Length: 101
Image 1 (spheres, rainbow, N blue to C red):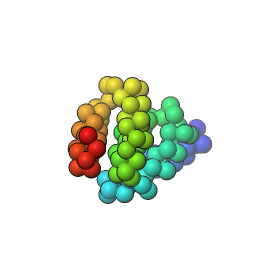
Image 2: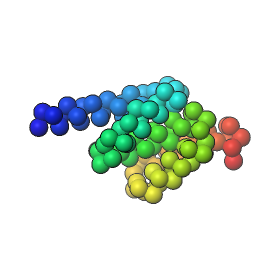
Image 3: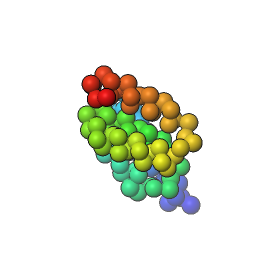
Image 4: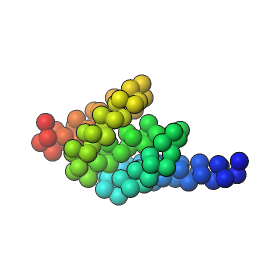
């Protein structure tokens, strides 16, 4: 029980750190903690949020192909997630600004 609580807290910190970095436009720094979460906690409670944040982080890091692949996986696995539409819009706007139509 205590080990699980500690693991959950550490997992939550990875997502929080990645999300905070994305919010600051520092996507290249956010990729690693977000990927760590997905690798270690593939059934975790924050998987959908983490996938959405990873899409945005990859876009900010100008890894457009990877962002598109991450978005496809996110859309496929979390089609009902409430962040899907805002994430999709963010990626579309980002691509338009970068000239990636």
